Length: 482
Image (spheres, rainbow, N blue to C red):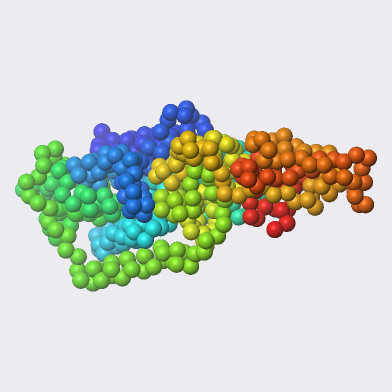
């Protein structure tokens, strides 16, 4: 069996494993299954999160496996493990040959994107992390696949979720980065991997001098160029004796299979000669610097114009914490048992778009649940300690729309909201006598919220018989009259 077939089998197995773990996080598997293991193996997620938050994150230890793999084998992660790379290889691609191959200047693009991601992290924003390969494949699965399964990442059922215009647009917008990466195959093979992938840029820097790299037996090489034509990342240099640029080689082994004389090889014994340094032309350097500056400007534009908009967030996090640590992977949406979490569409909040928020519709945040924290790979939503559990609060309190409430407006006995409230005394029933408009033989109880006790879980709105609910949490609740 050729190396290319072996690699394809490994890629498919890894992709299946990734999908299985993701479906497990969506509720189709056991709780012990590590649904975020691929995020934890991603060193860019760990590095950018630690830079933005100025704190050490323990999951960096898992990313060390990927770093060690890159130090020894170069960018083998990209060629054998990355689920996005596997999808790209499964897609049809244009095969450019000879003079039709794109300029090597495009290979600087991944460093431009990497600098933009890390530069934004230095300034306290992780918005550009939407271009991280693990993020761009995880988020569509969380925001789109789960509703299609009849679950409630963006709604309690698929029909209601797709009917919500704003949520639907954000969910399907999450497909754009992945679609972009796959569509670039129409320009050239693995064009995303060698020109735009920020993780590929980071791993390229880590693997500047890998222990195991491609070597060419000059005495057996016939300069046929078949290795160069087979290389999907344009890493083989004709001018340098058909050697490979290790920063672009993804160890796919296609060159080994294509070589008719077996001159191309990846020996387990480290090569004694040092890899020739990459010396870009001055024009390439200036273009890369200019593009980096432009990318940083675009990345930080939302931060420059943002306002401190009030958005309901999960209880074990904050606007500032999400801005520093959230990588927009969407894992929290999937694990929420009540479907109250959905992606924010705000560009003016501190944390920005695609960060988790509590929906204003009739859904509720279960007290003491905190399952969203168990799937968060960067601790953007953290597990609260005992003191924090006592003070559990989402930052808002429920309000009653008296003009819509059956008890307040019509004098009908109800108080179903009080029956649902998990906090004793947070929702009280007080007698309301008959009025000239609403006459009753006896006073009825009407709901009144005690703001000092309400934790903002929104459970009351799920039991309200009025549509839209006459009681609920949020600054923009439908029917709340604000």
